[in-house]
Length: 459
Ligand SMILES: Cc1ncc(COP(=O)(O)O)c(C=O)c1O
Image (cartoon, rainbow, N blue to C red):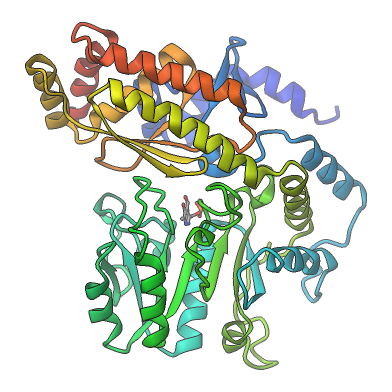
């Protein structure tokens, strides 16, 4: 009998949770259950997901920014079908294939001046590992500096650049000499750079965890200091690049000219894992420094045809649909709507972001009764109020969002860049409703809190 994926899915759909319970990650399954996210998803299109009950959900997680074009984009689908049908000579390996050259050319055209050599891999973390190795090879120096709250991936090198203890615990010792500096503190940065042993300073121009935006002078000054002390300046654009913040690269907001840029996530159009590390030619040449070393850094699936075709199609769609501009316009509208709510709800401390990378930070209420409820939730687990908001948006409004990071009362919105006025209205009115609910002590938000507290104190 022929293999049919459609049939397999239909026959085994109801086994999904059981399979994960047995063979994959039961702790994740349980956590999703508790927060109301344990659904059987059956379809994704544009900005929406559908579950097996036929309910539609607005997806503001976007696969952590993989779905900038929305899900199941017809152009990406068509190009993938086309590629498969072409029987291309994929992964010859002893080869310099056309599509990789074309995607490299298309990316370089979108980079700040001087960035003209591209290395392809499969994930954001690999792009960061590449940046670390290239920086060491180019400078002959061992150390890398990163910011508090930073997130650059979870492989060992990238984890050594992680600003949250929650991710590092249990995996130490990490890379020696990879040291954290506080954001917006130029003196602390210069103190480290002056030691003369720092290969690179890596930043997310807007941080993914917490949506922290540096002070306006910080990144340009940091770049200038790096130049002065011979340290490379790396912008990790894995999450904020590809138009997310209303510019192709987020670092364009400050006119930065980094030495290395990393991209991944939505570069594969939502279908194919792919990443790119884009550098100055002289940095690239310090790694691939002789004929003997021409493959000294590589990965088996780098430059694979499926990823390259998806990347080319993604850039084409971004241009055709003017998604970078759209992210800027829709981001303004969404932030204006959310900021209007801030004036009405005291628990909204700040709405911040650029384009469609938006963080909403909460603060404790002033009313005595609510204050006690907030304190009980926070005592059980830091950042619990944000988790309660995530749960309420899912339960009552079928909107998927995420908490902004470990232990913070921040919600992060990463809508697909294709959203329109209809989605902006849905999001703002859903937030309005959940904030109103959170002001009622006997409302559903706080009754859910008691449930969560039980789980938080359980081992
Ligand atoms: C800024 C940044 N860098 C690197 C990574 C790691 O990417 P990946 O999960 O594809 O390894 C992420 C993932 O969220 C990220 O946000």
